Image 1 (spheres, rainbow, N blue to C red):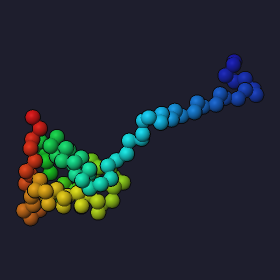
Image 2 (cartoon, one colour; image 1 turned 90 degrees about the horizontal axis):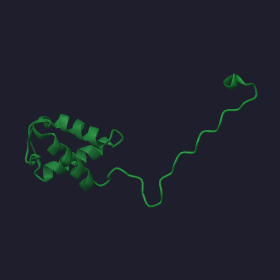
Image 3 (tube, one colour; image 1 turned 180 degrees about the horizontal axis):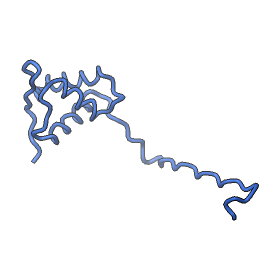
Image 4 (cartoon, rainbow, N blue to C red; image 1 turned 135 degrees about the horizontal axis):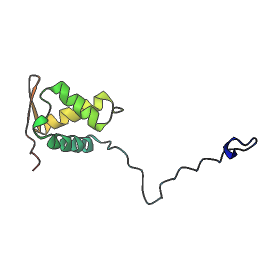
Length: 102
């Protein structure tokens, strides 16, 4: 049988395709402002299912922005959302001033 032929070597694997120079690799946003924009878009898309507690907001933002993002950056994004008035905390409970998606 040809597949069990002694002395045959398997064909080399094809080389991975590289991106053309005109298409840069997509990277995650790095500034707090860009991360806030992504977080706001996520909260708008969530409509009425937005996190009710501060700890849940942290974990939601962490899940959206990436698990490899440092916890301190997630806290900066949350505090920036509060500073902008998009999220208001009353103890551990949250209220949102974010428009709903239509």
